[in-house]
Length: 530
Image (cartoon, rainbow, N blue to C red):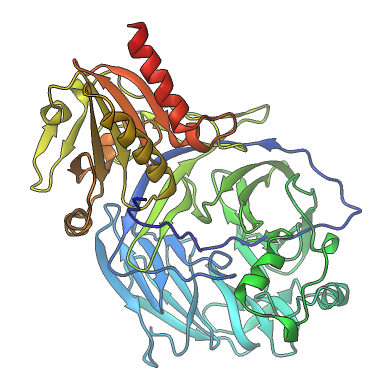
């Protein structure tokens, strides 16, 4: 079996459950539309494990850079995925991290706020220049998360008296102003009864444009809205329909009986973890949830004080959201991170999906709409009807019409793939390879798209396919025609370049889908009828 590269999506978004007295919300399914994706390389690896997507490690700065934390460095990339600089690193000097950089956020003024485990918070401007470093002695071990709003620094974690909580500091003096959102005795008893004490970081939170603090705990479905003075303003207590409470599951094996991460993961998969809330468009905020997987994203309205609905993300962990996009991990490894940018158009009466037009060469996917829904079964493909407008960029940087690569064969089957996906491509390739080998009137092509030349050349050097392989350095170009890109998909072309049939990853794995062999029989029957 051919395998290009295995996909290991290991980051997580944590969720939990609800008291049985709360009302279960029906909630509507809110689809997302993929707009673009970008690539982060330079050896930037995202930590895996339980807390990988619980605490924010990704943000968009006031200078428009993407800030990504990895191994105590904060990497700043521009919108074209070029590394601009890296800041921080391990060390005792101002701006460095004495122990471990635990979270990265952006303030209301676009500043970068980074939290070190050893009770230190570094604040940089949007370009990565150090502005201030603060010591937060109230925390016993580590502030989990820090954010800056106006003249306040807000931090959460495990405090000196062991109890968790959120502290608000005067940013100029470094003095604590107030504290709230402590862990109650009943919550500690719940964690103890489930053998889950010590599993979780401190409270997670975000700050609204009006300066309110939205707080979550990993073992609770509720979202608590506080003022900066510590006054509880509102509790969002609707239970999402996909939510499974910690209260409803069996306890984890005692720690002395744990045999390893696999056993821990089996227990984690039985209930929902609640992640860090994040502001989205207007007054809407989102809360990621995890059931190891699938991942979910819940939507709430601050103005209306209500639950709006949810989106099932499958195996794509939530990364971040801002006023423009929702960011999801598409691929994770120690050498490459691919992040997709999505939008959700939410009406008060119904959820709908909208698309924006964009130039064909830009990364935003205007013609293919990768819609993630509950069943992950549908994609509204706006693909081309023939190859005349379809082009690729070769390894020398020259652009070609795809028709230049076609042979004189009466039929062409083209598989579109990028070098991260394994199972779907393997199924398509093996099926089509055997199909073409039995017919003289079909030629198989594999278009491999990847934006970095040296990595694409390395891949091609060790690749053996019974097909004509076409490398492409502009992934954005194939989005017009590939039926499920960035997931593997194929198109059957006639001799004149017109599209005869398409087959996507959604057809292969979606509810009501069909095996590749069944699709190829339909293609064969179509030829016979002609």
